[in-house]
Length: 341
Image: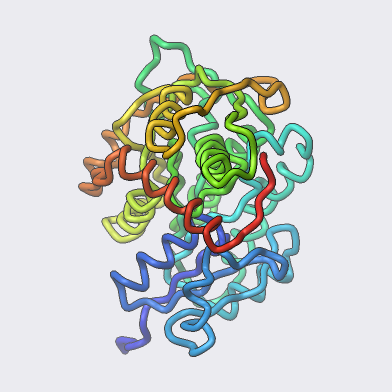
């Protein structure tokens, strides 16, 4: 018998930047029902525009779940019974991982294991599963190994990166050992509206807007500006994730995904400052923002993923940065108060 039930997607970390944009994309471009998992205490700012829809039960349901609590994951999987799983939830701040390494490893490695176990033991489902690792798994790569291919050795440079290496390996293990349809991705730097202010480019944009509004002196405080990054837009990233699970998904496959625009963090900052209404902004290194160890050459080879899915990034760096700055202008114009971090 052919079921007429609509497809269902479970998104862990739905209230994050990527999870919220993925929800927007799927609601607009599919007829799937979306189940967004988040902790009961997660801020809802990024999904505020979706809450009326959730209240009406219009293809969107929010579920309580915590990667550190197996029973809650069981409940989320049983309630959603998904055809697709996008596992995005994580302790995702590299700098925080230096001060909270155990929590980072527990959430990201064991949390992924708990989720996959909950899926494995849920009867009569066989979803396509995306496990989101990170380009940070490659860590400190020598220049002669650029661009970074999928087979490049892992050399993680933070507890966060170590946790994502574990996440990547756990996902691939469940595909090989249990025949689950798990694929892992190593997404390189992606940003845009709703980016958390603990990440460099969003912190810079927020500080610039606070300067424009006279809330702080005209000094942007920074960490390492020499790191070379490849930038892509979060809206391109979520389109890639949709293609990952819908275009001939291969269990156990792993892909690098990323943009095509490369520049240092310092060059990115100079571009953001050039978009400001202020012409007196200075830059100052803040020792507290420097990591003990940093991944400084992040340039991907994305041939494998592009050839498999046909995906190409579409949104230029300049639009991404403008939209990120505009996001903070809109927030502060609404009276949102921010820490100068």
